[in-house]
Length: 344
Image (cartoon, rainbow, N blue to C red; front, side, top):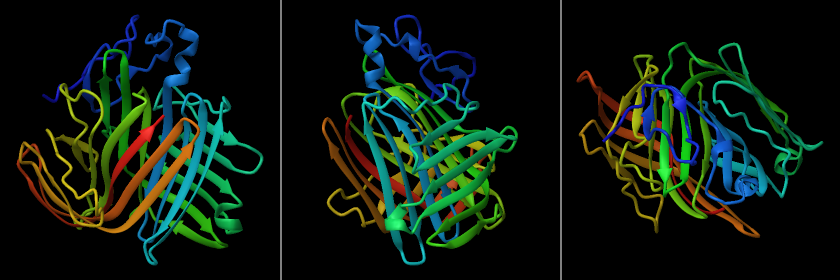
């Protein structure tokens, strides 16, 4: 269990299979989708390919998320804003069938993402050892408008959770989760500007590339926050898709260092998501209770694409144990946990 990838290679061999399966602290595998080989007509491979860059930023008052995705037979662009003080949330999404206007880079460390349809503008840039997120959505929430210019700093040697997961014989998921990137800049909603203080605000990236089954399901939990002693603490837990024999994506990230976890079941009530969720790792290094205070529900059903997400925002409390034996008490750590069903 928990095979760590430590050597560089291509992601896929000439037959379209993963060269290495497991997890890594850095993106060591070269994404090469030109080797996809699950259809005889290779020209059709792109129709099943799913690629996205999803950024999320935690601030004391707001949670803001934005994403650009290529779903093969459609492009998807969305953003949502949650105000913790209310609490209140609004979300806008664009689904563009048969579009090929979104180009996503093959390397999570290089390349920019741009989307502009004349009304909505979104771009993610890699610059100066970090990321810059720019959004201008004038009609967001019936004209209230959402604009932002946010810089995420990626400290040197900051570790991430990188997964190469097989899904059946020739499908796969290649994913990088970056937590706890200090965030600065500003966001503006309904004419009010909110400044981001990097000593209080942290962002993260979910960079995904892969070929999934048409009907898919997953759970994901994440957090990025500061501990009372000033250290940053990130959380990444997931299950529900692919063959996790080689490794799970479960880990916590303390001051930029990944502490790998074994299996972590998601224990929750799918008939009442507002009840507490429980997370206990099989290796005893994590024991957390997640208490939701807000539920984001996102549903879509367009032609052959459908999705239903229950993303719960709340607080984690409990304990963690590092690889070196340090015990960390966690109290009211802000984060989210979700259930996602998709046909895509």
